[in-house]
Length: 225
Image 1 (tube, helix red, strand yellow):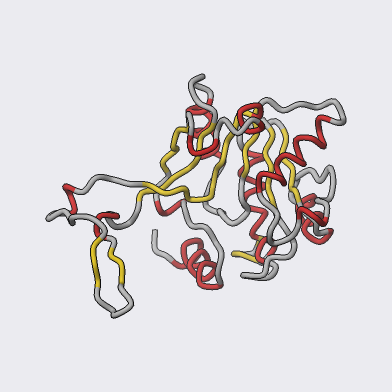
Image 2 (cartoon, one colour):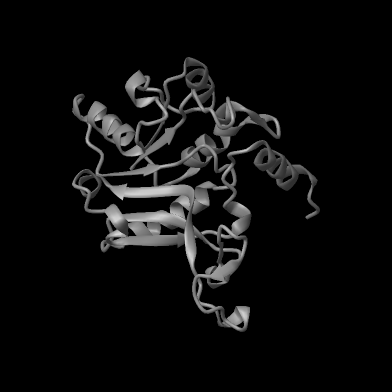
């Protein structure tokens, strides 16, 4: 299995977030270490257009077989195009990957154990993909909309008790594992033959804002055991 860590250099929401220091290490280092520690992964690469990111990634042990083309480093470039470019780069050099996993560098609490547990689901022979998910913190049946006049309306009948509400989950951004041929032919689109690997909320933080960084620092250093 190939591990791809996508790390574009031109993040506008939080500039430099992929290499921003978090508890003494660049953010991307946590994902590289998790991939290298996983028994399910054969090769770990960082897909980036930035030489600065590339040098840091190499220092922490990731491979940098190429630099991402500029046309795939824009705000409008899709993650699918980025992945297909990577797979095709290897195929042109005689290397084919039957499976690959996307590990976003913004999930520092996802560890090697989570990758391996997801792989156990992936290798049961019945799925095209496995995606990590976490449970919504509140029942989605409690969701409301606000009309233009400020009045609230509920989307569906609210359960009288939280305990009776059906559970729902959302992708947490930590693990996207695919069979390559299924991915290429779009067979895994819309969660076809996709299993969810459930991660608890404490491991599911996806860093995207300065507040997320502050919370991550607290989780790593300040909270009591």
